[in-house]
Length: 69
Image 1 (cartoon, rainbow, N blue to C red):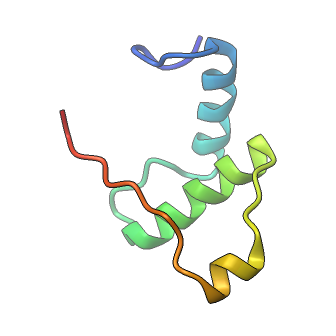
Image 2 (image 1 turned 120 degrees about the vertical axis):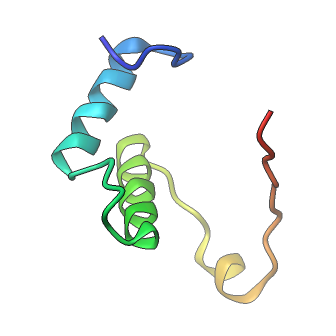
């Protein structure tokens, strides 16, 4: 199961796909900022991620720019 061409655990990809689908994603008709927030929230919760509050609120965070191949 899972998405074709996904590197990693197919079972994890399949479970995430189920959660995205249950949240109504992908949703090209919805506001893309809302879609982005929803997707990030799903990934954040699924993997138990967290970011330190103080650096986010008061500092400049390092960034990475990804360009299409």
